[in-house]
Image (spheres, rainbow, N blue to C red):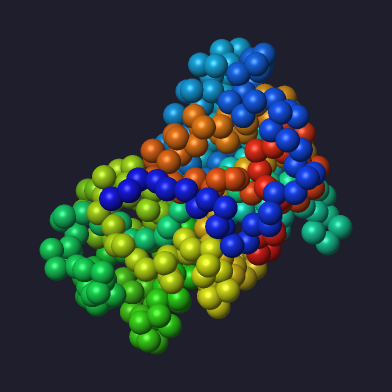
Length: 333
């Protein structure tokens, strides 16, 4: 089972690298190994980034010993709202759905602008994780998972679609599965074993419940399943939101949430430096490190698919980051 591969330049939504990016020698090196950064660096991110970013932060601070990193991880919508609604100071933001940044931070409708750009740097797949002790695990296959997970007594955990991308991406995946398998009741039958009152704000909070047997299956990212040595269903790319070639088909799956309708799209994680960042110098160095070969290896080792090149959206991308990302035209970006 491969732990991490590269999209490469085949990412369907990415335009060709244009001259405005500059050449790789026109800015600092991707590994960020010239003069070390300093001060306090505040990194907030999606819950699914917690484990890889712990390793990223450790490697970054080894190279930049004068930086003290404060980190917080929660549902992506929640961490964005911390900036836009609570005015929390954040230097680097990482989300599990790139479109949250332009939608919630680019000042849509003339509102305050909290970010000017984003860089998509890794992708993932939505799936259901389980253990050998899960109800029905012994007979579950890629062909019968819907029937097994719809049985009475099966307990399914998932995150809140109002606060976390994996919550609405799980629902989008089930909607796509209905059409793919031509089973109109599939989503309702599976979700009957996952009542809304049992949801949490980010799916990683349910990992202990899965391991202890309190729930049988968990809607989660493939990277989390790999990191925690869990079994997972190998869903086809037509429904797992991993394949940019399926972008048009993914758009057919829309999910209502408290903040609006979420339309299906390929899963792309993104970074930005908010406009209120207290330490932009260290923030840029951190993003450079995430995009460096060392940072990419950490993400790949943790089960993510590295985007090579990374993809940039918005405007006013810092000069030091321009050689590290290709301008993109991602849906909703």
